[in-house]
Image (cartoon, rainbow, N blue to C red; front, side):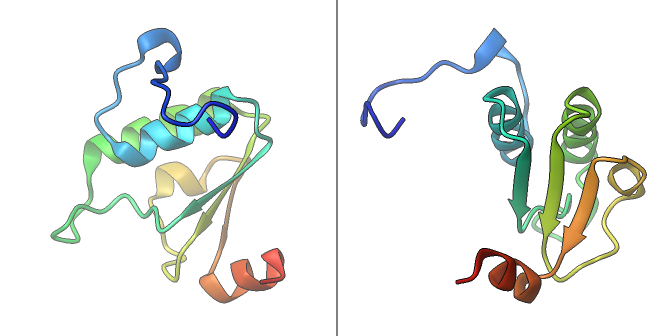
Length: 103
């Protein structure tokens, strides 16, 4: 993307994900990243209810890319159990993330 700004990029395998967060996580995992920081991703809709489709789609990505570490960054440590049960799931709050990035 950086090398060719303004170009149109296809989604690998034309996968159909309705959640923007799931799509972003999928593309990062597909590209081979071994650590993916999911900043602000909590599986909730704009009314703070569980977004069932987003939760299921993100769980599917986490399960599929089992060698990738998914680090969810937000101040809610009680994220959906479907994510927390995965071995490649971890969580940190914003202050830990800032410290980790040495910003």
